[in-house]
Structures are given as C-alpha cells and as structure tokens.
Amino acid sequence: MPDYRALENRFSETLNLRRRPVAVAFPTEAPPSIEKFKGSEPSGCSFWRLAAVGRTFYTDPGDHYNCPVGSYTHKIDLPTERAQELPDILGTMTNLGYLRMEEVPGIPVLPQTPRFIVYAPLADTPVDPAVVLFAAVPGKLMLLEEAAIRAGSASQLPLLARPTCMAIPAAMAHGMVTSAGCIGNRTYTDIGDDEIYSAIPGTALEKVAEALQTIVSANLALSQYHKDRRSLLSTA
Image 1: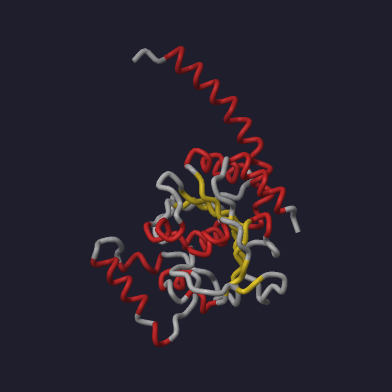
Image 2: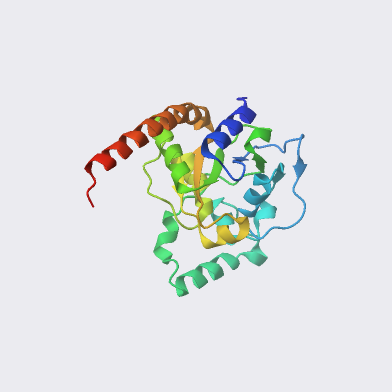
C-alpha cells in the first residue's frame, strides 16, 4: 500500500487542513484489524465527522438506514418497514422548493450495494481507499483542483451541491469532484460555513499529491507576478 501517513501529512501541511482527510473504502470482507461501528448516527456523512477526528471503524448497510438520502446514494435499500422514509423526505424537500423530483435520477449513486464501508483518517486507513474526502477553505481546494487537473485526475463535472454524499460515487466514476456541501451535511459534520469539500479517487491520490507540489510553487510565483502587475497597472 502507499504510505498514507506521509500522504496525509503532505496534504495537511500544504493545504493547512483544519480536519483530517477521510478515507472511505468498500471492502467485500469485514477488516479484522478494526472495530465495527457501535451506536447510531443520523446520517452517512456523520461517519465522516467521526473519522475526521481520528476514529477508524467499519459499518454495514444497516448502520446507514437512518439516512434515506445517503442510503440512496450508496445504493442501500431501506427495510420494508422504513421504505417510505425516502419518498417522505424527498416530498418534504420538493414542497420546500429545495429539490425537484426530476433531479433525483441524475444524482450519482454507487454501482453496487456495499457489504461494508470503512471510514478512517487517511493516515490510519487499513485498506486502500476508494475515495478520500477533504474539507477546506476554497482557496486551498483551488490548489487541489489545479493539482488534479495537472495529474489528469479531475472530473468534468460542475461544482456539486446537495446531497453532499453523492460526491463519493461521483468521484469514483469521474475523478476528483468539488462539492459546496449541503445543509444536512453541515449540520451533521460541523464543517464551517467557509469550508467546502473535494473528493479524490484513492487511485489518483499519489498523482495528485505529486502534482500539488508543482502547483503550490507555481501559485507562489504567480502571486508575486500578479501583485507586481496590480501595483503597476491599477489606477483606481
């Protein structure tokens, strides 16, 4: 496996991350080296919050039933007695003008139902991640986006919005994506109003990290170039 601890350190130092990057994986067998999640959370992205502060664990589909929308993006069918919860919340969202029903089929979903989902800080992931999630201020994720472009790992998708959890299947299918987040995610994860997300496929992580060094150096040089031009040419 790549040196994920070194990668986390590189990303954290370069991007001045406030919280740890979260590795998400979908193994077919329960990892014997880590604990099964115990307890209850209101959403799938709540598990991001736990991993971002240092916890490593895995879930099964039943741990995600409390989040009808997150279950949808992760291709997890709700049990019969709870199946109505998805149309209920979608109905609420459409009645509020938050969502149009015709948008739902366009929301990215996982290609198949996961047997297990591993969440971990990037440095501690016990398996290769399918996706790594970064929360940071836009100025830092600008650098990450430019690095992904340089590495040939950026998607052609526009800035994603609600639901935030669709960033995981979107990144797996298309390359690095950036998400503005959604009110549910912000409530469940405590990220700041000044932070947004990027999701990078695990297979692209090393290439993006390598390209990031070049991008940061280039931006430092260009920053001085633009400051000089502003000083010389701005008269207002």
